[in-house]
Image 1 (cartoon, helix red, strand yellow):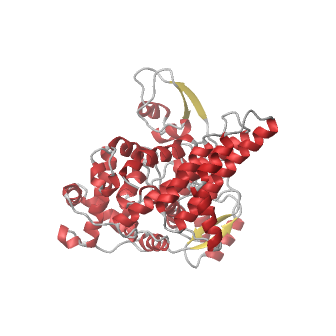
Image 2: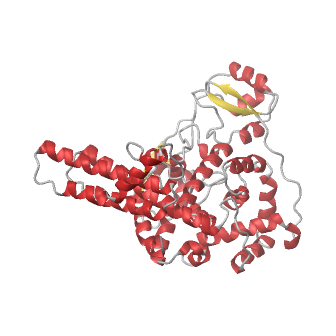
Image 3: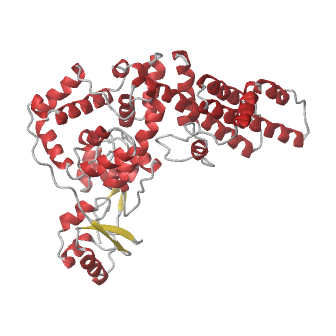
Length: 482
């Protein structure tokens, strides 16, 4: 499969990302009937337990699929039942071709596997647009499976070309050296403080990343994402150590409600980041492009690739100049961090002791209790409780049973203290509706109503604080009252 295949591949990926809503970052939804699960259930990497004669028979069916397809095409103007049967035949033929592709792939025949998927795609296009809704949905599900299979086959090719998928090549070029100089000068304090905080999470994150079969160097990604601050918040409303926006966090299982925002949970957000980067690696096949997509979204990177019209995965730096500036700096900045932590003396750094890991045990609290009151009653430190449970939005346990992290050895004391405390109720939030006047900004509104820009953006689901217009109505959250 040569470079000429890339435009079709990118079109299929883009279709699966944006056309069906299966992988859109902005939607945060999953497709009906969970085609992603269907794709995983017939994973390309899996083998087969069927006798070789049966496998050979399916491969022959795939080769002769062109003979089976015209049988569907030659149907005349059937009655309603005949039309339904013809539609089912189309879907069955497509599924047989997908199965045949799997067998070819398992046998190591990439070209025939791709050819079978091409035929399957051609077959499902013959399903009438006015077919039964259930069959139309099956068509969309098969479209998703086909595009995912092609993506995995293509990515696997470049995984073998680019080397060990568990290593990130430490390139130090002009772009990386520029970021190193920034860490040596104007960002030196930021680097040293972030490195010190890394000790709280490094060992746990490294173990999780290693167990997932990914490069352990990715443990340093939160240094450039958040400075290893559990509650870091970006201008784009990305939150936590791994900087998830709400929709992407939701897509990878991070719950967000009135009580809890799991983007702030170190362990759960790390699991989500691993799942996200695993998916990106299946698409792109090299870690440089994966990290660029992690920063700005796979859809944006795919659009740049489609415009580039070259075999970009052979060299990430061909893609570098066409990415948005912040994203283009992202990978060189990460490589700069790796260069310094691997050889600090070479770059003029003396890296001191890091913070100790956050050790804890858990206790189940089944009703709302505020951590401040709980700390006072149990003779614990409130700052410790808060640091162990950053995902609690009000520093209080929710109404449902919740596994609260507490300092080692304090489980029984905390449990007894929680039982003696009254049920805590969250503060009531009130709003006013404001019509934006010419010249007003979120900053001026925040000052006027004694609130914050972030709370106004959250209340109105705004992604950018710079885009409001005269005449627009905004909900302004007022100061909380009990």
